[in-house]
Length: 158
Length: 234
Image (cartoon, rainbow over all chains, first blue to last red; front, top):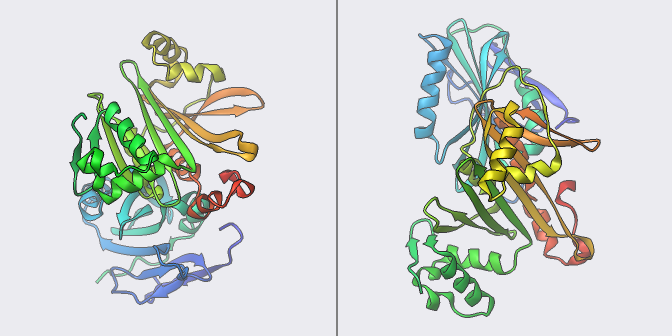
């Protein structure tokens, strides 16, 4: 993805920016708590399309407890979930975590790379999901995309 | 015929080595494997045995710690990865998955997950010593682990993917990972000098994913010797 043209996206409420490959297609936002959903163009042969989902929640606890809660929830929410790595990172200048995991979607193996950060008690999560067989090639690009995520104004989640 | 247990839902067979060899023998000779063992009628078992008989590449996984030495095998085609996993009780689990699930199987075998990060330094090691880390002889393994005690490793994992390259010469690629209290380390050969480099779960997962040829490459290998290429070039 190193030579891919990127386009900067903002949500409707101007709360954040995130750069994505120019050919990724935005889907309608299901609501303020899921302000961005985008996927690569359909490949034509079926299969899982690489995609990204941005979510935001009002968080009433500290960063560590928020993420411990997510670690408990994910195995029950995603089929054949396997946590592979956790890395402390900075997300939009705040304490964050990068979570790498694999799970199964529609009988296909996918790799999930999730970046989460807490900004003014708003928990922002950027989740990339890609076919496992393409993860090695896409990994550096996903990191580069995630690092463009910037919260401009936390705003309201409701 | 020894007992063969089938998990109907997953198509996983539990059997001993003798039973497995008989099934492969039957599959190789075109005999209906279901006549050898009822469980071999399962579509996943059939697909797995086809991969064993005519693989385009083979997988070897060796895991060892101070007490145990375990070898697992795999056979890949574009459609299926047949895996023969050794259980602690000595019995074998024969399962068939899509090739894209092989990284997940490897991750599960070594219980890959978050590990110690922080300030860690490479540890020098002779390439020959890597084999000793997964030697069946516990004394040889103990000495090898002692020689790399700077890593804090208690488990060694060696993954090899092998195939017939140009002119039918064996070719392949692989990975050696150490795991333990000191976190994950991977072997690297740089200018002829071997070292164990601190890595993380992301590195190991990415390497597992890159180890396997993609579907198109696997399919290309079926086209004939003239199309054989190193999957590293994909």
